[in-house]
Image 1 (cartoon, rainbow, N blue to C red):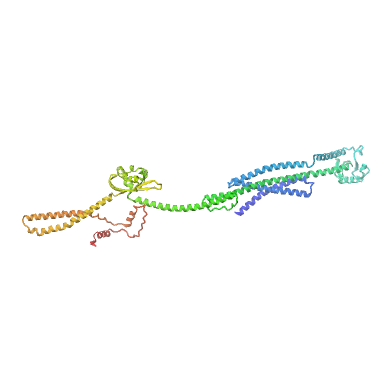
Image 2 (image 1 turned 90 degrees about the horizontal axis):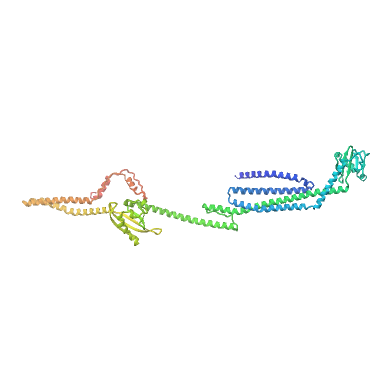
Length: 602
């Protein structure tokens, strides 16, 4: 991944550097072509120094432009990707550029005007005007001389119109005419004409005489007509032309140097503003980005985050210290909250387990249990209440007991029983009710308890136990006990009476004759019959006193116990068996029951 990144970076640098190289080469060529006329009369050292400064400024400008463009592109990319702080960085950079670009451009404009005005005053206007007029008069003089030579009359008085007439062949001197004051210059004139014979034609031209004077020459046939400029005019014109030709490029060169320097300063100021904006924005957004990332981590639940990179003493450092303190407090609070939550979960689990256990117990309790508020409105009840009074908890919750319970039972018995809980503040009341409930005779045991809810409101818990079957069973048991005692009390003297009657019949009846015999026999018969009747009555009492006999049959005891436990699904009962036998026979059970009832048979 690192190699690929470096390759991409190198390719990007080459793509940027290649156009810059081409642009720099083109600009260098254009600058060289444009400055050829300016630098042609300058020294080699001045040319090297000038181009070194130009190249250095160009390289500096390209580097600054590249860095500025890179920072600008980076800002745009970060803005498009919505990087944190990109908006602030863009605003700061734009602000710095705005407040630096306008003064810089104004300063550049004023400096340019000042440089132009200064270089326009480099030569005084009168001197520049005089120089220009002198150069112009020289030009006019030369053109006039050339015109005269071109129009010279070769057939008339030629000696008056020209300064010398010489043949093309230097060996011939018969037709030579030279003005007397120019006789000393004749060898130099001949040498100059011989040297420039190839350029002399029918069109007059100026030729220099070894750098001291100038002559104008024109060819007519085999003769050369010419005029020589005065020495003073030549030296003055040459000096003036040299000074003007050197002064003007020097002025332009210095002016160009000033322009390059001003351009470099402008680019440097703009880059400095851009760099300063980027640096200040980075100094501001760096700590803020660290704080933002840390805030997101804290918001996601990571309280181990640290921001050690922000250690300044300014407002950002104070903000970082406050954030560290906040994270430390949040970490402690989170640990305490987790401990409290764990404890609450344990308590909630225990409470839920207890609630489920109590709900299971209430579901299986055969007594009617229901809770009412202080206005005797139903809040909750168990299934036994539904079976006893035909109340559905889902539809009855919130309704008054007067609407749910039988009118006579509630108004004449239950409500008066519960009033001491409301009026006197008693904690518990109880009572027994005997009467008809839903068309059947019932005997109920009722207990009412006053409760206080967690919110401080009062409530009442009513427990109604249907003891109708229990009372019937108790009465039945009492009758059985009475029958057993009566049978015992009657059966004990009945046997001696019957035995005494039978003995009298065997021994006494045979000895009695006459009417007493009949009376005695009838009396004994009555005694025996009455004893049999009493015995039958005793047998009935005995049958009442005895419990019904068991109806034993063969079966699987494990399946029987499993079916019995299915009746209590809400109570957590663990049942397991390692019984490996099948069906049990009822005969051993019957034998065990007989032996238990009649121990004397064992």
